[in-house]
Image 1 (cartoon, rainbow, N blue to C red):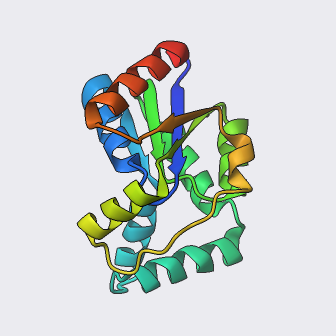
Image 2: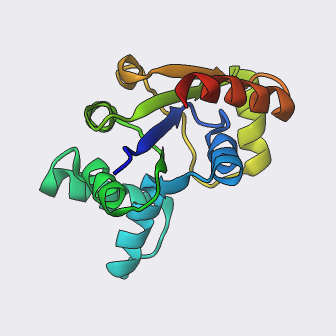
Length: 167
């Protein structure tokens, strides 16, 4: 059986992770597993309202109860059961998640942009309760970095160049 190609995306808030994720799904047929979606699904099963605070609470409760690597292990259960060759993990956030992804042969791509651009994007999308996140410890696990400081076309060219190295 052919080995799976696994890419994990992480990055600063407002950097363009969702855009890169959608691009890989649309243009390369990657099967996307969103860590945030797993948490939302669990919240729905528990009958809890899906507010940002409740999602964070559920995520943290499961990490405390089952270990800091609970959510990334749930992702890799889905990876193992997937028939897709190309898998995209959207939302790697913590050092243990990055470390576990690397141990499972994922290629980690960090996406970043200038703070002023990220700020403008956050204002434009206006998601309730968003706060700046830090990735200092997680960054030691990344394989590549994509900068998203100009146009979508430039970002797409950067994605293509990077994929030529990976695929």
